[in-house]
Length: 78
Image (tube, rainbow, N blue to C red; front, side, top):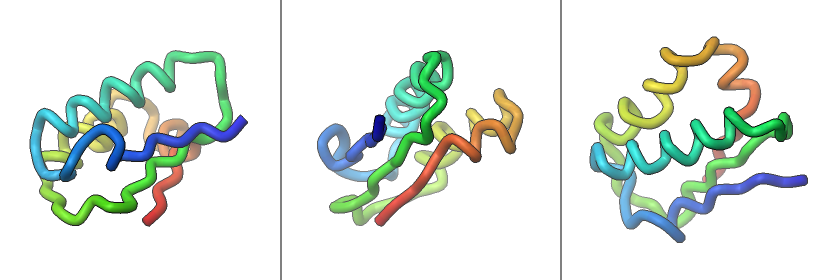
């Protein structure tokens, strides 16, 4: 089963702490699920980015989980 989070359906930009926290929650729920298929994060249509977003989403999860375990389950596109 293909798992995709299309960011532009949920947030307007990847530039705020709140957006990063939203994505972190989505990814935490996915990581806790029995589904071991990779999840794709689709950045299509997102044109503003900041370190706050990435620090509060991906970086927080890399620290919380084993880096290779987390990164092996995540794909990024666009």
